[in-house]
Image (cartoon, rainbow, N blue to C red):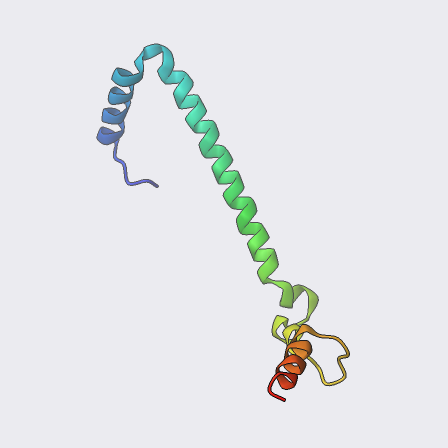
Length: 91
């Protein structure tokens, strides 16, 4: 999981006990566990949202690259406007 063995974990607990004291150590450990749980939940949610966004082609059946390419019969497209503006400037 984190690469910490039993002896290293015990040493970290003893250091935490010396630094924080017996009154504050359980409270800090509980708060740290809460933060880690929230971080894991946020990571799972973000991963799920990213996977949903990346599967647009599969879910909708549309290739995202096709959405960026203007068609010939397209009456308004920012890509067409930029092309039209560039044609007018040199003249």
